[in-house]
Amino acid sequence: MKHYIFFTICAILPLSLFAQNASFQNPYVQLVPEGMKNSAGFVVVKNTLDTPLKIVRASSPRAASVELHTHTMENGVMRMRPVQVIEVPAKGETSFDPNGYHFMLIGLNGKLVEGEKIPITVEFESGESQTIDFTVKPMATPAMDHSQHSGHNHAGHNHNVADMVAPAGVMGAHMHHPGAWMIDYRAMAMQMNGLQNGTRGVLPFEVLYGIYQDPRVQMPMTGLAPPSPLLPAARIEQNQFRYMSTGTEMSMEMHMISAMYQAGSDTMLMVMVPYQISRMKMLANNFQTANMQARGVGDVSLSATFRVWTSDAHSVFLGAGIALPTGSIDEKDWMPQMGKSQVAYAMQPGAGTASFLPQVAYTGREDRLSWGTQFDGTMRAGKNDNNYRAGNRYNGTAWASWRFADWISVSARVLQQKWENYSGQDPSLDPMMDPGNDPRLQGGRRTDVLAGVNLVATGGAFSGLRLLLEFGRPVRQHLNGPQMSTKWTGNFATQFSF
Image (cartoon, rainbow, N blue to C red; front, side, top):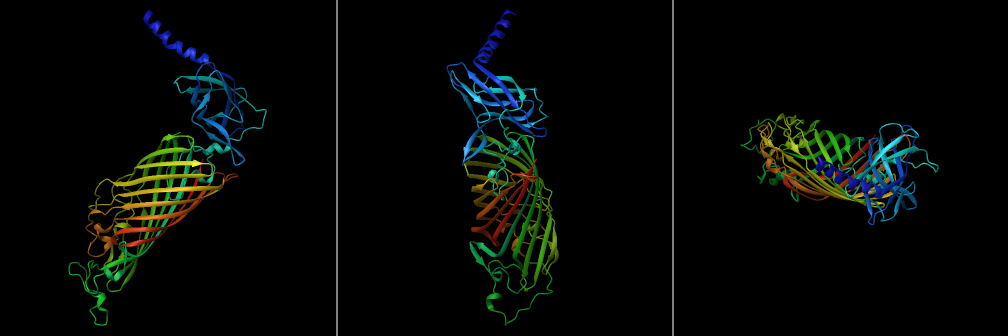
């Protein structure tokens, strides 16, 4: 028993001595109007030690999170931003006041009442912590405006500025305050015209079998044009591809609705529901044309993004997710010479199997300039019910943004994509009929350059509402052809957090 008492005293004594070396004088929290979710705590911290004390974090049961903040002057405007460490000098003191350092209480869980005691636990770099009661009281000087912190990104600046999120074509690499929700709608459009094999453009008649029926393709003779000496010989000669039909033009739209929830200061959860619309113009070797279409809900995804490292101006994120096989792989439409048939692989809304979605990203900023890079993939789990496995996809992008004002920024971005051929084969898609039916000719890689603009409402009833636009064109593409080449892409997004 004596030994137990001795060791207990030894364990408590250092903490008691530490508490005497760090004193907190006149701690108080700013009284804010009912309904305001954020406030600030102020205090004078005194250090009697011969070495500096470093405050690294804080927490309170009365707020979703407590951050260390300071004020900085940027272009003549005073702004609040988070910091990672606040140092109290040896044998000195540090003042937390309305014009400098303060504890930012984000996501208050109830109305503040004058005279109420708010416990705030302050943690030091040494591992020790102290809990101090801060008294709620009004400020004699004009109150600090904390309204813009309702959507703070915790990575270096006020959230309610245009460049706090990436360009429209980039999803991820962003955080809100704990407990926040965000609704996000995005639309992606892509236009493809003409055929390409490798890096070389090819004409439709270079991939068609001429006007003769390929005996290997089981199809009726009805509608086929008979041989004629009036046709140019180049159009009836056999070639290396010898398909009976091919696509010549295609447009694709992807509409995505997402709900995001900030589960903690460094964790964002997301569910996304996509809807795909594909339209293709077909040409047969008897010169017959047709317009095919497929549409439907795609593969619903569940994902999480984690901020694994952050400093005043830089953050690193890791993401992981899964796409569920909710999209159809059996869409049909009318095809030349074949009637209603299964549409090509690329037009199907789903992959038919689960897909894993890894992601890594980095963002940085300095005053009005911000930048970032992100790498992500779509890794297919295996073959689907139609006996094929869609190709994996890999994306890498880098961007830079310049903020002209809080409500507007412009961006430039480079996107590198690679997608693989399919393995296996859908028995209802004859690979000799159309290059879009050939699983060996689905892969490729492409480099796009894009320009964009971000807009955000900084006040009024729609404060925090974002509109993002982006447009780009390929500068290089290599297709495991023949495939239709991409001419342009466009992205649009709107977001609102609460």
